[in-house]
Length: 182
Image 1 (cartoon, helix red, strand yellow):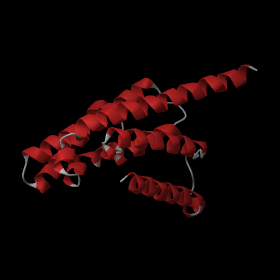
Image 2 (image 1 turned 120 degrees about the horizontal axis):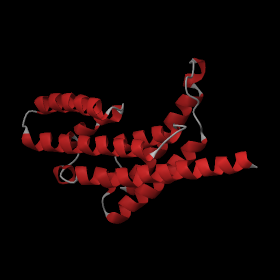
Image 3 (image 1 turned 180 degrees about the vertical axis):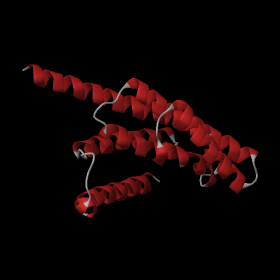
Image 4 (image 1 turned 90 degrees about the vertical axis):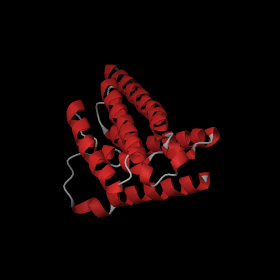
């Protein structure tokens, strides 16, 4: 199972890297991609995958959260308030998706309600996190025993990953201040 995850994320990484290098060459870039963050992202994800594997919960490596973590690493300014909001909306998204999955028999109705509620959630919190729309759909593809643990798993995943990103960004900011003072 762990080999599957490692292989999946390796291919995902290669795909993301190759599309940034070759496919996007002719496109105008508004934001400069900093490739050093790919290494930080890989280390962070491999550590998290190892912890999930040791805990016996490999499905806690949740793709929508990983997307937001990668985007957060690319931001020049990142603070605790943003990390809290991201973790909050992703955890609420998982909870709403899980509750509607178990409460409503019609998958179409559950999906429609999920999308409307996620739009309302993002408007209330005041941030844009497109991955929130993918999260409520995970219960449709995960086994039921995993779906029941999805909200708690997403909370723990968000706390670990966003705290790690925040710690890295603070360390990076301190290092850049020291260089500027010299």
